[in-house]
Image (cartoon, rainbow, N blue to C red; front, side, top):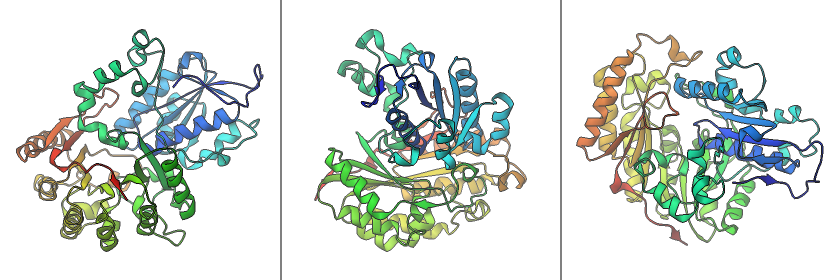
Amino acid sequence: MGETVSKQTTKGSPSRKKIYITTTWTCARRKLDARRYSDYFVKNNHIIVNDPRKADVIILVTCADTNSRATEALKEVNRLMNYPAELIVTGCLPGIDKEKLAEIYHGKTVVTKEMEKIDELFPEHTIKLHDIPDADILWENVDESKPFITLKKWTGKSQAISRTNKFIKKTIRNSSIWDSPVFSWYGTSVENPFFIRVSTGCLGKCAYCAINKAIGTMHSKPLDELISEFKKGLQEGYKNFIIDADDLGCYGVDIGTSLPELINKILSIPGEYSVDLHFIHPHWVIKYIDELEKILQTGRITRIGSSIQSGNPRVTQLMHRYSNIKKIKEAFFRLKKAYPPLLLETEIIVGFPTETFEEFLDSLRVIEEVRFGWGVIYPFSCKTGTEAENINPKVPKEEILRRMAYAKKYLRKYKYTVRYARYLKRLSQDILVFSNIDSMPNPIRKK
């Protein structure tokens, strides 16, 4: 990554600061936020550095959707407070777990839904955050205070892992960690992806979710703006596009358009590319199933993510998720029939309050029947202030862990590759990642 400096910078400018930006384990949207912050500081004549020890200001972009990720974020806050730089905590942690954050940190914060408040912390900036276009490339963390990340002694200079020389890069990519299915998160298994964030915020009211506290309600980008972003990616040579949002399926409902209209306009643009859709709530998959079938028949959509969270109607109803499991499965079957090489992805929560073992098995049966190509199984995490906090009885932690272990054996029996993500030491809670290598998408299609 190296040091990034605006070309407009006047050498020796007294207002020029060294900025270190890093994220905790988080979603693609927050990594895009980190990239946008970088662009913002560079445009305002600051320097982006790769070492927190050299920084004047540290920007930490956080996640807190589960208790384990909130714990990780709090640990990172504690770690970064040890540096002399001013720390600014941004992202979802100050919106979701602000009380826990306040126990250890009394500095400045910027919640995801109020990103433009960063301008208030830097009133001298002439270029405001709203002047900075949304980012399209994920931010890559680099910390030169951690030698095992920089590989400096081999490459001769500090670089992000993905930019090291070919020998080192090949060695890393051949490791068992890199080969794990977990690295298909956020498009990292897709070569050189170009992200298009179509909206921010969420219309959902899931009983277990606290993310709305941090991301706010739905705001869609104008259709023409998104088409311009897509054309920009094509002009820059990108071939793999990921359409992403906090609540992708409801794109456009606030501005008089829809996700199918957007995708059809994108696919009308000639070129050599593929498009992934991450993640569409099952409600919207069913609502748009006829349009999605026609879209898939073009062969340009290689992956669709849709989180069912549970395969049991009673549990999904308690979760305030789409509860007609039969309709969900029928919709997924239609998608796969429309384009058989489609990689269909999902997410499951194990141990939602009152869930029985038999209801848990319903989730595994849906995975087996639909033959999802990839997915994640999360242990239930009870977030303060959510409806799920007051749903009883809770499933004991020991029982949740037993079910996770059972899920691993069950899915392996049906020819899935299943691994715990515990080697990602930044996570304090195990998750299961499963994949079906027979469900990988076709190469890029040319139109």
